[in-house]
Length: 330
Image 1 (cartoon, rainbow, N blue to C red):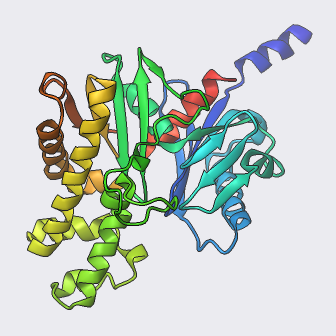
Image 2 (spheres, rainbow, N blue to C red):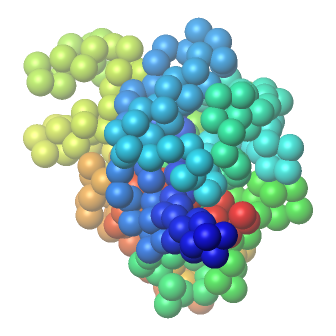
Image 3 (cartoon, helix red, strand yellow):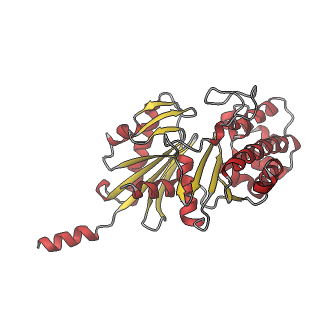
């Protein structure tokens, strides 16, 4: 009888959860052993009145995922939680996340008051890059990933392994300084790539344009609150070939190309992967022009050999990557 029980336990199906917390939305998914998302829930991030409200929403979304999939908490092997910002992964804390308000915040401890399965924190772009790498890019050994959105996150794979650096927070490419007296970044510094080329930076310029009454009605309907100006706005402006909106996109592209050139001059990767909602919406126009800008600024012996490609997994990248990374550490 004991042998039969042991066999039943060994045969029990176990799952890993991947959770992607972004600046404007959150998503969670059950991921099987092959890296496939078999059940997923997502929703917009509510208004952040206090940081604990973000955790409450995360906890509810995790409960919703388990209920939707018909899976018990005891069937969960690990959960990887991908978060933008500076992390203390060993202590399960988010040390700084400018766009979410986390400051030395014990995120893992807070979640585990409600869900007791093992939780591993990971930077969101590290997770997204690893998901892309694990499923689509294993033929490369040196990969730079850059994901522009609310901010600009980055990740780096060296010799086929995710590179985290001495403190575990390597890859904060959005915070390289390109313009010393430039616009204010969410981190409090001036002239960072994120303050010049993120979707947020683009949205602030777009909000000003809308306030002048120079745009077509379809674009003005997004309103003058930059927080409501999504990637869809820029995709629509690009489709309409609206010159002012295209000017914003092209300025962002030029800054991104300049930033990437600085990175590849130092890192010399084989390939650059661009991902996130903005890249998904603007597609080849954005990716090809970023590659052109990057190569025009990079050292000829380095930049000329580097490919720039669009990520393929879309919103699933960080879910898959965080689940796979958490599984590796279980």
